[in-house]
Every structure is written in C-alpha cells, then in structure tokens.
Length: 419
Image (cartoon, rainbow, N blue to C red; front, top):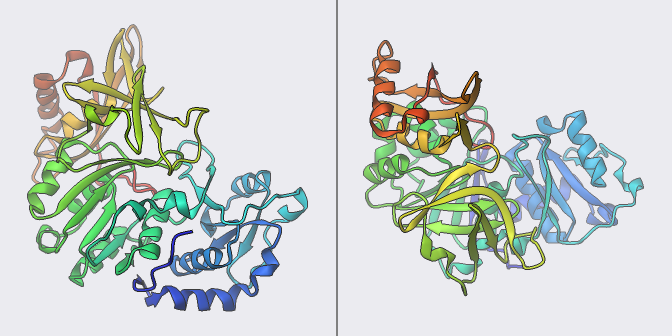
C-alpha cells in the first residue's frame, strides 16, 4: 500500500481540513473498525467532507469498502449492492441500511469499490485497490499544486484525484459543489489558488459559457488534464489559446482499464507509436477496437488485455476515437457516419460552444444524424440552422450533415461531468 502524504489539505464549502483531522472525525462518527469485520461495506454520505472522512478511515484500517452519495441509493441501487453482498452504512452513527452481512459476503481487506456513473444503465461496482487507483506512483515528483476537484463522489476519476491528494506531497484539493458547479469553480478561481484541474471537455465548455472569460484567463493554471469523454481538437486549441503557459494533457482512462494513455502533444487522439510492443502499458487495436494492458486495470482476459469497448480509427500517424461500439456509428443508407466526427467538426465552428449528434430512425435510409447545439452569445439564432447546415456541407460528406437541429440554452452536464 502506498504511503500517505500528510502535507496536503482539502478545502470544502465549510472550510479546510487535513487528512489527520478527517480521520479523527471519522473515528468519532464510525467508531471502532472491528464493527465492520467480515463485511464488504459502502458508506452512504451526504457531503464531500463525509466522503473524504470515510475514505481515509477505510484506508487506515484496511477495510473492504467504498462510498456513495445518499441521493444515488434508490431501491434499485440498494438492490444492486445487496446482490454484490455489500452492507450499506450511513455516516451518522453507522446505522445499518442493508443486512447484506447475512448473504455470506467474503471481504477482501484493501479492496476499494469504485462506482460507475450509471448513465447507460444501473451503476456497476468495480473492484480496485489503492495500488491500482494510485497511478501517480509513476510520477517521481510534482510541483506544489492546488487542484479543483469537480468529480462525482465514488467515481473512478474522483478516486484518482483523492489518491493524488493522499499519496503525493503538497497536492491540495478544493472540492466543487454539485449544487452549482460553475459557481463553485468561479469561487475557487477568485481565490487565486487554483493551479491545476482535472475535468472533462463538457466541464470546460460549461465553465466558459457561465463564468466571465477574464476571470478564467487570469487563473494561474499550469496543469490541465481532461478525460472521461472524447477530447476534440477544438477544445484543445481553445484552452491552449487561453492558457499558453499551461501543460495540457488528455488522458484515456476507465474504471476497468485504469489510466492508460496520456497525450501531451496538443493533438486529438493518440500517436500510432503507442501501439508498439514492449511498453509498460500496452495499447493495441484489433478490428477497430481499443485494447489496454495495464497494471492499473482490474478486468482483463487471459493475456492481460482489457477490451475497452471504444472504437478507434487510424488516420495518418494517429488513432482518433470514434465513440463506443454499437452506439457511435450512424448507418445512413449503408454509409457510415461517426457521431464524434460530426461533433468535432461542429465544435470547431467559432459560434458553437457544444454539440451532440445522435441517430434518428428515418424511412428508406434507416437513420439520419440529428444535432443538439449550444451557440455562443454572439451567434444569430435566427440563421443558425441555415448557417450550420452550410458549414457542415463544406467539410462533411452529404450523408453526415445533420438533417434536424435543436438549439439549447445551456450545456447539459451530468454529475459525471459528461454530456
């Protein structure tokens, strides 16, 4: 198990705390760790402070554990925990919420339960350990940083940031408030302390739409990491222009494969040389699907490879992400259009802040691409459909041009920071 670094602080909406202070609070609330012997537990929390307290408590005492926000525990989700022989405990006095102990659970000390976002169905429980979560062990040292933490409690990306604060010295965290993420990011920016952020492209587009540009531009950011979604060239170019001194990277990571691909050259996709053999983290493409072999993964075949379910396509010396298998490709009368390609082209338009392309059933041709778009304040909405149709006709194949348009007032962003 990696050694805890006690030199970082965590800032919550109600003030700062150290890891040692959080452990003391958790000891008071949860009591002796022996009460969780023989169980796989998940702590149900209401706040980020409670979540951090539960994390340091479980790590310190070697529990088989995880965390989940109370509002996510619907009857269906509670049933999913019971199926996996997980006992739910509240933070307030550790009241038992489910009698999973009677289901014959076999605990694994040190196992950490990571939750998927559940956006494509009921959430999944992904088993990890701090050794697989702590991908920063390969970074010799980092400059002192204050990171903004926007991620959903219990997700893989959240655990990544928690492990950074836990195991790397002087990596402070400022937690976002999901009641108004843009407002909490704005407040964090006003402190002048934020030097680094890990987020998604949708988060940045949401922030750029809702926070004053001057305030964002003045932020002393020197490290920007993006992941969780396809990172297109438009958002890379925009952030590079705003923060010319910052190191901008996009990271391919998933709950199952772990953090596997880090790209720092300012280009979308990844260079084909990453698929060369004899790398510590293996990358291969077979029949257009991306496979990862990594010490940070937790689900692999007999040869150690994880089928990510993501479609990639080689274009020149790079592989570009084309979306998820079974959902990314739109079959238009036998012609293949990839929604991420259309979105990337739309996002490069100077008056487009965000776009999302999906398929809609249509007679004769089977499917047609349709687009939802958020325009900049400077755009003329009365001509937007005509202008964007003409724009797409210039750079996309005719079958890939969206045939129906919906213009939204704001960027839809889920708790996972994805759209």
